[in-house]
Length: 402
Image (cartoon, rainbow, N blue to C red; front, side, top):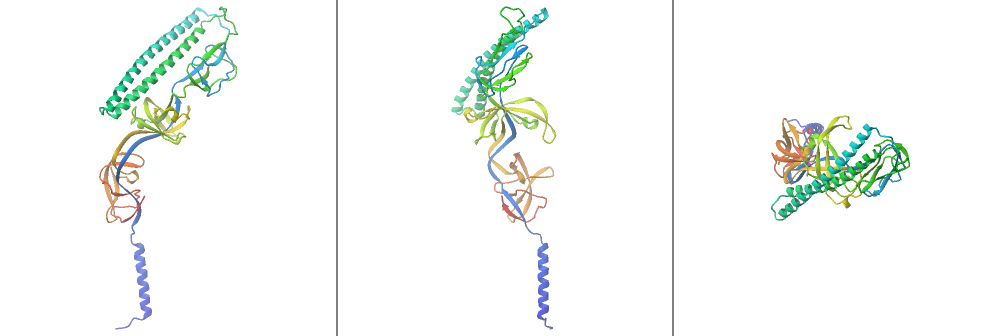
């Protein structure tokens, strides 16, 4: 046999190495992927939205008749006392003679105001009766709950009804004050020119209808104003609530009594709240992207004591998270691992041979981070956290945990 020269052997070795390198370069390599484990734990579904604080009951003090309001010295934030603090002094224009029609209209306004005062007193009596009943029901549910005979949600509902009933009494008491002030205003319209004890220098004193603070000073300098001109706005900052306009498709999932987490309000802690009302009407709002959206106001009450949120005032921005569902020991997977496979949900599961296997799953509730798994996965399964278009069923992968 012909002997191979060393040079020829070297050439063949080089060619073999190049061929091996070429084959290795074009062989499919395992794809490195981020993985996550399917596990059991607590799962919570919330609806998140921005909100704004507001004083629940606001009162605007207006000019009772045509005339001149004297300079208002009070500043926003000043404390006021019901029927005691003088908010403004008002000098009415010289009264005109009343013809028969004008006098009849003024007398009708007085009669109507008197009826409103009487109605406000009846509403107060009814509110007190409902409050007493709600407090009795709360005491009964607290006793049953202590004995383990009633559920937590029934106790929370009873507490909510009691709080609402107490607030209704306060609102009814304030309504009486407002109705009485309206009656005084109506009576001033019956003053005629030449009436005994009436001249152009008489001053009408406008007092605060409630105990609280001044929210806005709508008039400051002395000026002539028409009847009904708003002068100053007052409210009780301790009677604060949160209003958040949510998408109508989210609002239908919310019920009065749902717990609320209040965040990003400026403090270090998360405040607790409860949904008091989902308003029964919606409105159209243009989003930042110029899209028309149907929105519904959701009203939230604070659950924490006043000391926890006393730094908040009227019109402050907060973020709320309404808890609509939560479950302990739920089987859950990352929401990012799910994708649509036709009409079904699917994930890629990594088997014992480090192969990605397509598997259809059934999911229940989900939030932005996690989803409840009803079928198709078991605790401990490793899934690809962010499956891309490059991943296929049966592909070898290299797992890299999150």
